[in-house]
Each structure stands twice: as structure tokens, then as C-alpha cells.
Length: 220
Ligand SMILES: *[C@@H]1O[C@H](CO)[C@@H](O)[C@H](O)[C@H]1NC(C)=O
Image 1 (cartoon, rainbow, N blue to C red):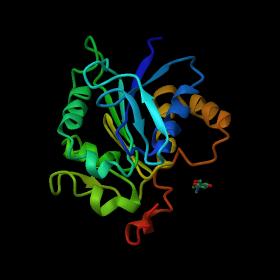
Image 2: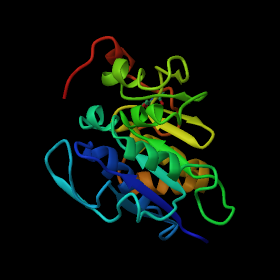
Image 3: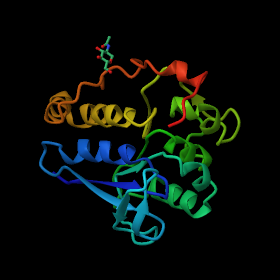
């Protein structure tokens, strides 16, 4: 079986769990290395997270190979980085319908938390249903063209064709497991969740107890 490449797009001030939660899910997949995770940032090398801890990324925007999935995290740095036109260009190029090699399927775009704000700004959520972090709702949902996206409040994640978006931080783990359940089967998702001893709900996206945060955000 051909392995699937997933690029994690890092920027200064990314939220660590948005990245490492899904990496733990996709890289512990039982179908032996079915998913290959790689990291990319504008200049490659060390990228500080919002927690200060750095991650050393492997690829820059020019050297990153075509991938099957582009995973975009959120984090406090998103508020500056949405103005980074090179990052926008990179995202658009990576998920263009013909971006993954040799006539294979169009790449998936997956976002976690305020990663959806990048996708909205890049026009990649136009005409789509999507969700984002409930605590950053007012900001994130106004990054794209007004009215272009049908934002879903009661959702841990939203699937719309090749675009999957998830709510705050841990919702990225639910979305990743749901993605595996859909692409690789329930049993594969269950095996990963069991390995991680994960008790969250990756079957029902509407099992969301954080909607109320939209009206009274907490800051982390
Ligand atoms: C909703 O999700 C929580 C875990 O996040 C789980 O404990 C609970 O059983 C789920 N509710 C239903 C109705 O499945």
C-alpha cells in the first residue's frame, strides 16, 4: 500500500497539542507506516511554539514535497501569521486540486483550532462548512470573505469534501481519529484510540460541550 504523506505546517506561536496530538494519532496507526508525517515552516529549522518549546522543522516552503494531507494548527501566533502572504501562497499551492503527484486524488486540508483562520483567509473555506476554536470564534470566523463560510457552532469537527476543520486544540485528536475511521476503517481508529488510551468521542462530531465558550471566551 502506498503511504500517505502529511505535512504539518508550523509557524511561530503554534499550539503544540494541535500538532503533536494529531501526529500521535497518525503515526501510531497500526497499518504500519501508512501515514508519513513531515514538518514544514517558512524557513525550515527551529520554530517556537506558543509555549516557548521549539520544534525543528524539516522542510521550507520551496523544498516541501507534494503531500496527500496538509495539516494546519492554530495557536496564539496565528493572529500575526494570517497576514503572511507567503504562508497563504504555500497553503493554496499545497492543496490545489492537482498538487499531489501523478493524477492522484486532490490533497486534503485539515485544520485544528485557529488553523481554520488561515484556511479562511486563503479562500480555502469559501462555500464550505467549517468550525474553529470556540474561544477565538469572533476573530477566526471573520478572517475570510464575509458570508463565504457556513461556520458550525456545535461541532468538534466538520467534514466538507476534502476540507476537514476542527474546534479547539484537543478536537484535532477527535478529527484525526474520525479521519482514520473514515479512510482506514473503524477498527483502525479503535486500535489507535486504545493504544493512546484515548476516551474522547471521535464518532459524533456534535458531541460538543464547549459551544457556550463562544459567548464568554476564556484566554489561555
Ligand atoms: C460525549 O463525549 C464524551 C467525551 O468527550 C463522552 O464521555 C460521552 O460519553 C459522549 N457522549 C455521548 C452521548 O456519546
